[in-house]
Image 1: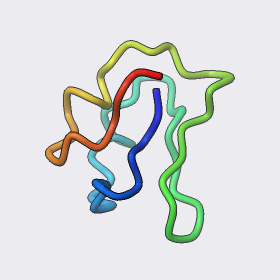
Image 2: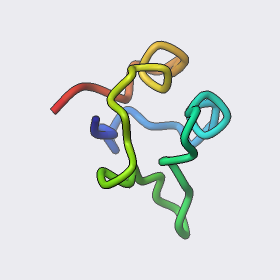
Image 3: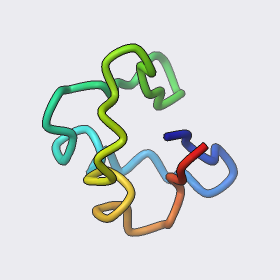
Image 4: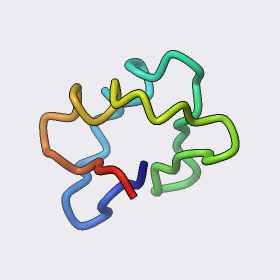
Length: 55
């Protein structure tokens, strides 16, 4: 999964949606930790800005 920074409004809905807590906000950037991401799509389906997609 990857976050499309141009679309991300930093609403942080994805952080709450992630069952393994693979998403975090560091400074002004929201990032996905690929080492623990399950690629389940919970974050992508919850994102109101369609800012998350499969790599």
